[in-house]
Every structure is written in structure tokens, then in C-alpha cells.
Length: 594
Image (cartoon, rainbow, N blue to C red):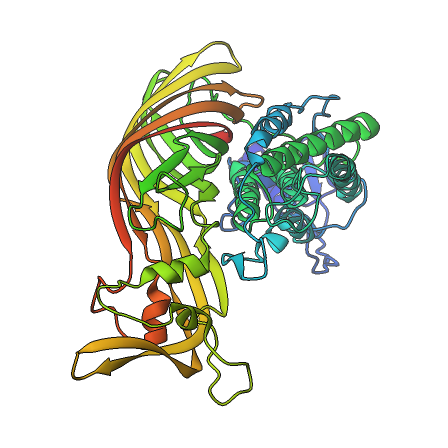
């Protein structure tokens, strides 16, 4: 073997085993002895700064064996970071978050809501539902305490997410400062107006009705949740917050604690207070304490107008229903008509549409439109003694003393004492709203005006379902009977010892389920890429048959211990009228694109 060939083989062996100290001279070489040493190895868990771009869901951790997956980047990740995911910090600022400019997020949507409440104040002249006198009481049966708790949904949800380690817009210091300013501004507005305007509540309890503090509190919390998580993580946080806030306002009306105007103004104050507070935080803290910026997508709400929205508005339209009552001449005013007058309605709904292009789409709407009774003319003025005097058909019964039949005889404590047939009477309002539930489907149209504004319209067909007005009566009094003469077959009403209690449907009015048609126009203002506020004016039409059942004399049958087998025994009225129902709804909606 040639020396040169041998030299190359030995040199290769030396390089492969890490040999050292090769001496080459005059084509001769010398190989130093190979020495192996034991490495001082210690097991140690090492975190890499590689980050897998997986979005919201973590993938299976790959096998790190000296090769790097092409899906990894060099940005830091909580998945591979030795630091815990959640850190309780006060004013931490994440790099790369763009600071908000002063008034950058101010939408001014609270102003038209507040003004709408002022406009609706004219609808407050209504029949007081908790009036009392020496004979009877009128009370509202619907009560719920949910609104006392739902008003705090926003701050509880936002704080809970932060405690759970879900990063929102602000770190703790900035978040608490913005929240405190939001409630302080809201409290100043609400209490300053309440105790200056001194509006009486619908239930007549206190003179601090306008605006609604519960509703304002609920919309402050909803807007905080919207800014912290809706705008930075998912718009469905915003939908949840504003949905619960809207429900809170509706419950305040149904609880007979607030008028529609109170709720609209309260919502406007809540939104505006939070927007002002966050604007001040942007001015004070600038870029400090920001953890996340606004989310963005390639879907503009104007040029890709598919949307989902929640809305609240005030309804105007049919104002009264009148029924002729021919038999109750004494109880009612001249003209023998029972008039139901309705005030402005509260309308809440959810709406969505999918657009095939920026001009045309299809969608649907769910809406509840509740019209409160503004007056019960012909009911609240009924004289019970006159009614009792006229409920009996003189052709069926003859009595020597109708006065004794009505007022009883004797004094309380006597063995033969009989209480008046109408000792106590109480109205219980089961439902004082004529409420329409509707489901509509149809075509939606969109006309972009600019990058931020667009006009919209729609043509809808749907189904209208109506919940009736329901007034119950509860009467207690002395028992009565009939003494028949078997020879003459004539009867005489007599007083009996003991008492009775009668509880029945005194008065109901409802409408049948019908088809309905709707249209409307809207103006959309997109203040962010995925978010917009929309003002709208909708019109709905339906033709309904309204049925009135009026049964003021049921207590006489119960006092006698008789059934309802003889419909001519006491006077009752059932009447139907057909009316066109025209409803105009002016309102606003919070809208997200999808």
C-alpha cells in the first residue's frame, strides 16, 4: 500500500474519533494516543423559546430531536415558557400592543338612546296600578328579583375572566381605574338627574324613576366586558354582555318599577359613562397596562355585511281598543264602552342575516313587543254595590230586600250575623301588557355609503303570537242562599252565616295568532372592523281578531255555592272585534359581523 493512501486512511480515522496531535513532517506522521474522558452530565429540563402557531388550541407537543419543525417560530409562548401562564401584575404592558388614542373608541351611541328616553317621557300619563281605597286594591302579580343580580353580570364576568388568567385589554391597574371611573361617572349622572327630575315610579312608590339605575349599571358592565374581551378576543362576549343588560332593562319595566323612557335613558348613560372613562384612561395611562389590542379580520361590516345583532327600541302604533258593553249600564259611563288605552311599547329582539354579496342577503328576526295598558277606563271606576244590584236577573229571582242581600244583616258577633256579599275585593293583574311574540324571515338589503356608514332595508314575512291582558279578581264576603216555595215554585234570596272566597278571571283581552308583514330602514355606523351601532325604524302590519271576556259577576255564583251551568244567571260579556295592527318601532342595536 502506498504511503499516501495509508496517510489518508489514518487521518480520516483520527477525525472521526476526535483524535488530536497529529504531527506531519517530510511525508512521515506520528499519531498521538487517543484518550477518552467521561463527560460530567447532569439531567436538566430546558425550555425552548420555540412557539407553535396554533391559535387558540394547543397541539400535541412535538418530539424535539435536533430538528426543528417548519411550523415553529421564535416568538415566546406560554406553552414552552418556564414562567406560569397567569401572573398577578399591576401595570404589565405586553410588547407590540398599539396604544389607544384619546376618544379613539368613543361612539356617542349613548346620546341618541338618552334622547329617545326623553322623547318617550310623554307616555308616562297612565293609570296607577297600585292604587288603594277603602274598598279594593289593585296590584301587579308579575314580580322577579333577577334584575337585582343581572345588573352586575358584566363586571362579574370580566373580573372572573381576569382571575382565571384570560388576558383582556388591560392589566389589573388600568382595568380597575377604568371600571371605577365608569361607575363614578354613571352614578353622578343617574343620581343627579333622578333627584332633580323627581319622576314618580309606575308603582307609585318613590319619585326617583327617571333614569333607571339598574339599567345604567347593567350597561356599564356590558360595555366594560365589550371593551376588555369583546373587542380583543371574541365578539360573543359583547353579545352576552349587552344581551343580559337589555334583559335587565325589560325586567325593570315588567316589574312595574320603571317606564320605557327610564330604561332607554339609563342604557344611554351606562354606555356613554364607560366610553368616557376608557377615554380618560387612554389619556392618563397612554400605552401602559395594555395586554391586547383590538382583534381584526378581513370582514368589514360594510362590505361584508353578514351580521348578528341585539336590539332595543320603543314602539308606537295602535293606541286603544274599545268594546261595547250593552248590559252594564250602571257600572260604565254613558256610551256603554270599555276602552283600553295602550302606551308606548318596549321592543327587544335578536336579528341576523347572511349576505351573498355587499348588497343582498337573507335572514330572520325574533322580537318581543310589549304594550302596557295606559288606562282601564270602565274597569277601575266600577261601583261594586251597583254591580251587585244589577247582576241578578229579576225574572229568575224575586227578593223582598235587595239591600239585605247586598249588605247582609245584623252586627258582627251576633249569632245570625251575615257579612256583606262584598266584604273585601282585590284586583290582581296577571298581565298588564299586550305582548306580541314574532318570528320573521325574509330578504335583507345593504347600500354602502362609505367605509363606516351604510343604509339597510328588509322585507319580512312572519308569524305573530299574542299574550293576553289578564285581570283577576278576588272577593270575600257573606254566603247567600235561595229559599224556594215548593207551592209557588218561587225563590227568595236569603243571607246565610259564614263567608266565601271567589277568585276568577275578571277580564281578559287577547289577539289571535296571525301572519304579519314587516319592513324597515336602518343606518349603520361601523366604528370598528367587526362592530357597529345601528339605528332603525321598523314597520309591522297584521290584522288581528281581539277577543274580550268580561265576567264581573262570578262571585255571586260562588256566594250561592252554584256552578257556571246557567250562563244567564249573571251578566258576562264575550265580544270580538277585528283591527288592523300597525306598529312602528324606533330603536338601536349592537351589531357584529361574522
